[in-house]
Image (cartoon, rainbow, N blue to C red; front, side):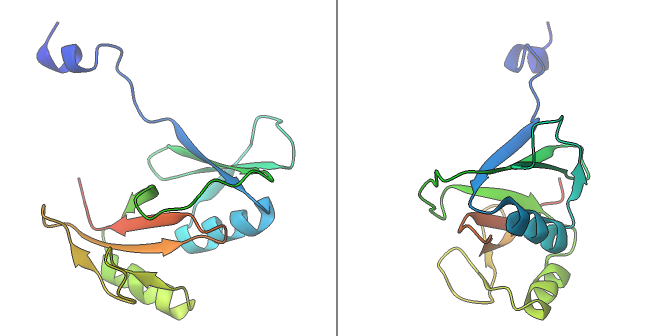
Length: 135
């Protein structure tokens, strides 16, 4: 067994994230139009669940529910882009508020590792980080 497989002996990988949302249609429109997520079949689970896929085949599920967790910036979804500046201009053109980690509107901040980031909220108040980490 090499050191890589010893650290992850079962070859675990990210499969999907799921969020509980108040109105699945409103949230689906937001994630489709703002992040360009592609909707995929939801496995016959009903109209209250919508599935999306990022370009790297990782899925993102929206589940309509009355249950709503507390939303804090420290608990967030993180996405990366090759062109953070263009994404910020796109958000401005759509009148979507974004801010840096300290909360300054329309600004980025740079993490200690040199990655720039911004934060925005979806229609349910979930925080989303978008950064320029081009792994």
